[in-house]
View 1 (tube, rainbow, N blue to C red):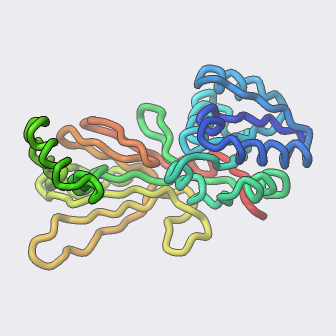
View 2: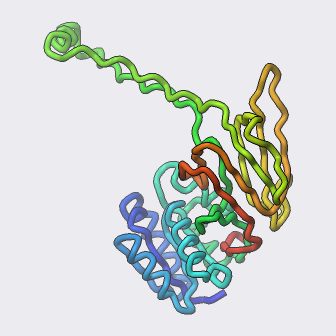
Length: 284
């Protein structure tokens, strides 16, 4: 790997945790020849990545920044020849995808991995709209969400304060109901051209995960693991699992969650596995 780095600092990371950004930049600059870019938005981010030359790109940012970099390189057909490094910086829950891939969470540990780690080639899913999925997708995308609970009135306010509110404010609106859990999903799911389930068999959920070589229980390299959970009637139905290279889903308008982002509605989407399609620097 090149000893020269192109450090692209996502603007959201600078706003969220400037101290972690500074620490990561200092560690990287002390260990390698680093050119630092501070793009103000997606267009400048793409321009900086496209002008990297022989420098090894390092993204300092959250999951969205990593996905943006992978997507840009994929659409330019430069992903195969470019190993990425990432230092996860973001708010709560905004770096979970990056860390699930094996990148350390702390700024110092992640920056040292950039300098001393090893590039590992990973599979991903490519859909028929040229979108990419790094870690997996799920249908339906959401579950039941509890209704918000109004904040209690502080005890110090006293009875007179509550009485005043009752006289001067309009009646409290009714509590919003919880978002209902999605109903049965009717989909035709085909794996490598073979139908696993058809529209007359309602599903509770469907997940597709690209293979991770060496991960116990995962699909092998170059394949995806598909898990179908039939609608449970009485006793819980056992999930159906299968592995293949191309997954086609057809049905009434459906949404799906891929790498934490919800897409759709669509009536058909096909994903294929791209084996060892991208490189990520991970701890040796």
